Length: 392
Figure 1 (spheres, rainbow, N blue to C red):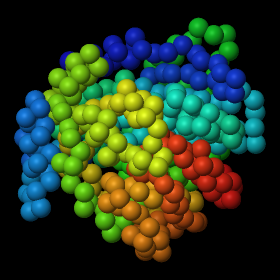
Figure 2 (cartoon, rainbow, N blue to C red; figure 1 turned 135 degrees about the vertical axis):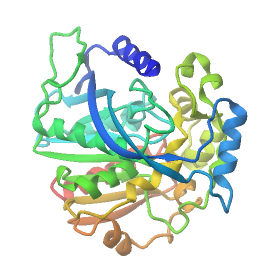
Figure 3 (tube, helix red, strand yellow; figure 1 turned 60 degrees about the vertical axis):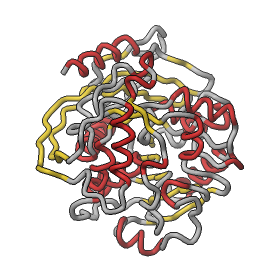
Figure 4 (cartoon, rainbow, N blue to C red; figure 1 turned 180 degrees about the vertical axis):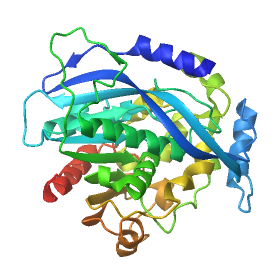
């Protein structure tokens, strides 16, 4: 609970004033989201220093591992504080009734969607605003300015999918801002609470995996999805965790990450970040350094608990269009080369049986991260063209 209290204080101190840019109005606020979820207690020894972090990665990468298996069900009934940002166009557009909700991956927070290096090319938030959409981003639990709960038992897909569902329901009801605990503004201009007729979910990597779990369980609350860094490739799972070096977060950078407790790890160097996220053809050194500046810790349980997003029967309630976007040179999901590693028809049948359309786009000369590749703006155009084609 001490970590949660510190996180709450951080949220109150960090709540930003209204920002009014040339084309957008943004407000940052805090939501308190109550969750009841059935998680699992996993066979994961505590990670409390760098030696533990390295051994965790080794244990999780053994070819015949039993490490990380579920021990027993665990009911989580807690309220989490979610640091959130809503941006809307300054002028009414033909897409004003469409809200995008974006979910970041492990190792990031919501800043991944609003890159501040050449934002006119790299910022997904700015690109969405330019197309006339409103967009909601938030820090998942265990990262950024949201609650930092137990890294072993709390931060698991079942919890996070429930949080996304609650945020989506609030947004669709038009009560998003009225439900906020903290809205800080020093500007007389106010951002109205959205009352969208349609909602599009956008994800990256593990964030896309969480959205898939949402669509599988609660698909009727989503009208469409753009899932980047996400593909059921024949190479998926062939790259072991130990390929990407991790440190214990609290001692890796005490000034930035000292408030993260047991079980939180962080990627080590720009070398590691390059291997995980980039390919040289679309790599810019300034963007690589920016990735180091905004990187975030993540809890060890997400690796063991990841399959929760795929568990259970598909309700078939999701009937909108969905586009999967993978980089051609994605090392994480395709072992470095995605073309020829997937069956689009089989993915549609297995994952999105009732979707109105499912399309896969392979971004040329791009690796696992879309937003920080120099090809970002070209990929965004493909994503927005897909939404246009399907009435979103």
